[in-house]
Length: 167
Image 1 (cartoon, helix red, strand yellow):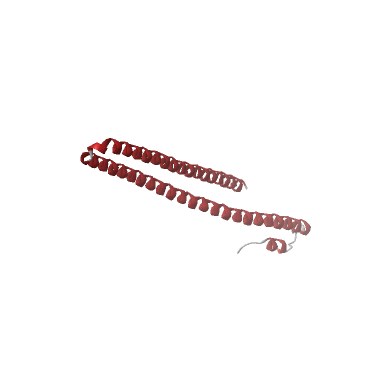
Image 2 (cartoon, rainbow, N blue to C red):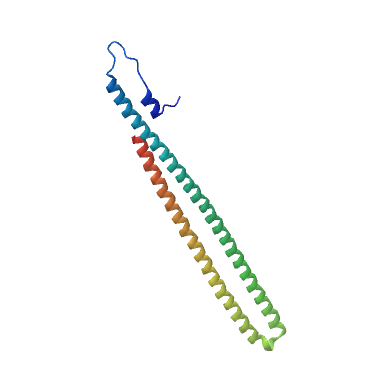
């Protein structure tokens, strides 16, 4: 049976031969009921706050998962782009060598064109790598911010636990 503040207030005792002072018992019951009511409100408030904090933790965990997936995806894209750039460079070099054998008189001009193309691809690859590194760094910072927020939530939960155990 759950005891409520109203139960405490309405509790009546039989009066014996040398019974308790009725006024003192009623005053004590009133104070006990008020204290009990305050504790119940605090328990409800803490339960609501706990639910909110649990929701926040779940949200941070979900975000962390999203960041991890984005980071993995970014790494895959980077690997694919590097492989494509290697393949493109290999194709261009192979074409240059084949044409150089067939067209000796145009070989110097063609080699210069291919070197320019390779340099442009390398610059493009470097630019893409820098952009991807920027995205990765941004995601890393977002992860750190999420972890810091989770750490603060954990510290706050720890403080609440200490306060709760102190009562």
